[in-house]
Image (cartoon, rainbow, N blue to C red):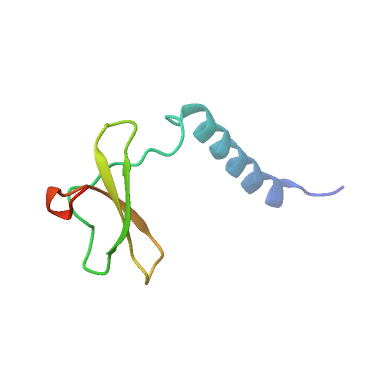
Length: 80
């Protein structure tokens, strides 16, 4: 007789957690505009766009060390 419990139980738990996440998540990735870049390592990329959910102008900031991108409310002193 093959014992599947040692492998099957953790696999079942992982699959159950994934199923729960899929059922209860609040739909896709939602970006939240920040008031300022999250840290001193972030650099303005020059990209600006109109954020559809808020209708506000947003700037893209990038951290070269981590590759992370942040979306910041556009500042009036940067022009437009």
